[in-house]
Amino acid sequence: MVKLDKIYTRAGDQGKTRLSTGAPVEKWNLRVTAYGTVDEVNSVLGLAALHAEGDMLAAIRRIQNDLFDLGADLATPDLGQTLEWEPLRIVDKQVVRLEQEIDKMNASLPALDSFVLPGGTTLAAYLHLGRTTSRRAERLIAELAAKPDEIVSSAALSYANRLSDWLFVASRHVNDNGAGDIKWVPGHNR
Image 1 (cartoon, rainbow, N blue to C red):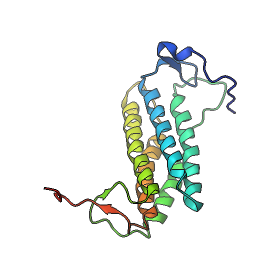
Image 2 (cartoon, rainbow, N blue to C red):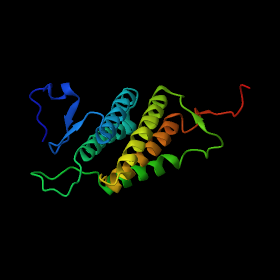
Image 3 (cartoon, rainbow, N blue to C red):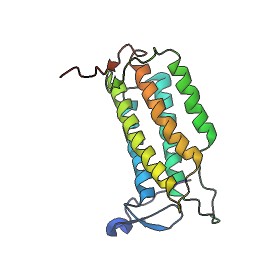
Image 4 (cartoon, rainbow, N blue to C red):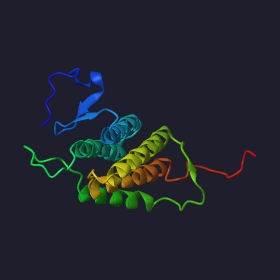
């Protein structure tokens, strides 16, 4: 369990931080940037939660918890070393749950005949912001996974990919099942 007695340590005053393994890295290290961006997604979902209720609020809160799991996963590189604890990892079950929820929400949505502009309800707009931030996190995680000296689990990368899909479908779902979507009209303002 996490226990934080003191919030500041001054350890980062020189531009360094530590991974959960204790390994020192620069604050701009790609792994730190990736899990920092996952934290940004979580903050956006905190804003979305202010406008959600019922099942949608419960789903957002569950995903926020999953995002801390994802951050912990990314903060603990698998270097084949023995640790004093079992690292927290994203598991396939978390990805499958997102897929099942996407399918359930998508079943009531009309097929798209154009791209959707971010907006509609306040909640939908925040979910779109979460989607775009999630896509940035996914790109960083994919870049990290592509490095030959780095290991990122396939479940972590799949979760990041599926999350942005979930946020897109959820944004349409809360926009009156797509009726409140604002559609892109190509060349409309020429």
